[in-house]
Image (cartoon, rainbow, N blue to C red; front, side):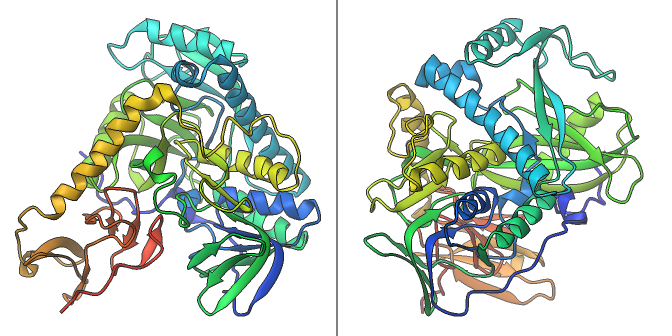
Length: 506
């Protein structure tokens, strides 16, 4: 039976060790302004500060409150989209560049942790991709060949090193890594400030403007700069240039207690669709290990069965890891899936030449975010970088046209729902829950607080007008079109929307 005692938060928040920063309270002038205080934003700012540039970072919320705090922290060059697909869509040469860049990102994280003395439990581990049950062994062989063609030193093994169940044939990816993402993020932030960078939290960038003097508008204040980097999981500074080429997906995770050493320190992924991913770390406070299991992905805002998805993850894990004990943590995060499984990093399309973006994590956000820091530093400093075209945000992979059409037809279908008949009434909404109700031609998002008070707001996403849906597990309003997310009272927590849900019109 599914556990009922899990905390609805990532395991990392049991001991985050994050520094605190204040909000921007005056105008500022720097060389580079960075919007977004996750791995991509802080790595970019850190590397630029190491080059002697004056850098300021603004983050909407406390440090670690974005998707970096919701990762399962697999540091790997084994990409979610698989090398067979990347080679098909982008060619073998680009697959080699992708493998090299993600390998370099792991190396750079290790180097930063060492040089800056960041205690983040960084460790090199092997990764294993194994078959789904009833899977085709040829799938493993094809991916093995594609990964080797991409330059990775992988090998085929008869099974992954798990004693509790037989995985069947697997690919071993050597010298991958894992760490504590928030301990690393906190250490990176401290290192950035030591190198002269400035960080402002609880500071929303209302508007980004390129031009001879770029500007980040923050309430009554302005950050003037030579360059702007927008690294906010989803860009908040344009409407359609990138959003039609990537799609938001929710992914789920649980953290369960398991005897220490029961599962070896390694990264594990199966080949199911959607796939599952597994790793361990010491349980916070001791008492064995924490088995982290993730998967059960779906399009953001297009399912409301989060509790069942957490339950399916637990059942999947208990069947394969019978020594697993109580589930202590459960959470969800959002990933942005691009057409070809590779991030968008570089100059923002249809914008001034001094505005850059980093988005499209495609399930590999920690390495993509680190690649962003390395690549954007070179672009801003005018240096050549072999990954420039690979991650160019303006690219339109011709062989991904089918996926492009499917995703955008799915988005179009969400607008049809906006004019469909509504049902239900506020009296039926349980405490600490929400629902979208119809008031004539208006869609109203209604949240009932823990004491019974009702809070009403417009259900129309301020980005491009799609109707949000209630996420019962995360207590958020999620947009099924482009992935904007809002807290239970309608305050924006994830772009591309850059405004709160509006008031209900009279």
